[in-house]
Length: 371
Image (cartoon, rainbow, N blue to C red; front, side, top):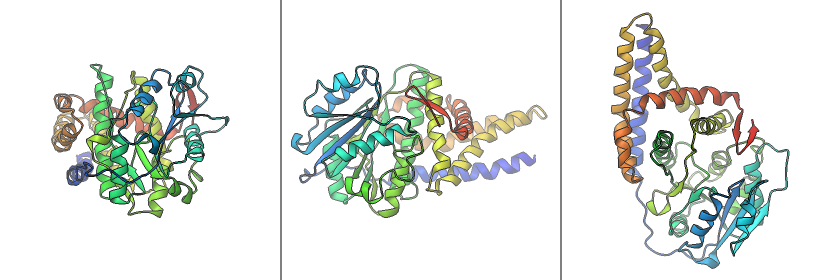
């Protein structure tokens, strides 16, 4: 029974954390721009590596933006693609194509963004990924929000589209929860969390914190590591933009192997965070999910522990459900509610596995083996 006396306080703390996320997410005001912003020049940066199947759709969507064409600049940075990515980009007018020359570096994406910022003429940098699709008022909403809040760094929502495959449904649901946590902690100014598929920051702020200097040796983290550097200088200038007009949609990975590689890549950043506020949260979440495995193993010595596994599974679902429901409404994923209970065991398994392997620091990304 000693095991239960360890798990119970962990569960209580986890429950308090989830309830805090839920209430914090609900407290974020939904944003709809009321008037057009002043003449802010925006540079959209798109790092791309072997994206021939996606880059055309993104560039077409950007051509349809409601923001004035003379105030937007689109820059694609080709990261050593060996497919038709560059050829497709050249077919679009008013799109600047840069080629990443550097090789033998560990963080290609950071180098690509840095290269794009050097060439950018806009005062506002907006980053997205080549497999994303923004809505027509995306840039207009960002510019209006930046002007209204005088924001230096803006975190905006990202949504994963999916079809009927289980791997895609699961990651869309999981990512939606991560987005909710991101919004909650950024709004309350508690943690530095974001996603590079939908970010905005002032160009001058990037240079004021010396860009990626000091974190350029880390393969990932072009988003959160930079965010923390800017937050340190402008703690009141970081905002979350909760607006459906600003949701960027991205594609899911198509296999379980690719999914776990992606999550391991994300988990590998934890050891590199300068924002140490996030570490107790990560430890708590990991210990809570690990408790399921502990109870399963203990069940071989006493079957009642397996009953506790079932009870904890149901309690976890009850605690998380209100938060999940709020997110499913905002992201128009009410259909996901029916999957919520069934996916709980899979969620526990993936948290424990990705957290463990993420500490080894090696993973595959874009055909590269990085560390």
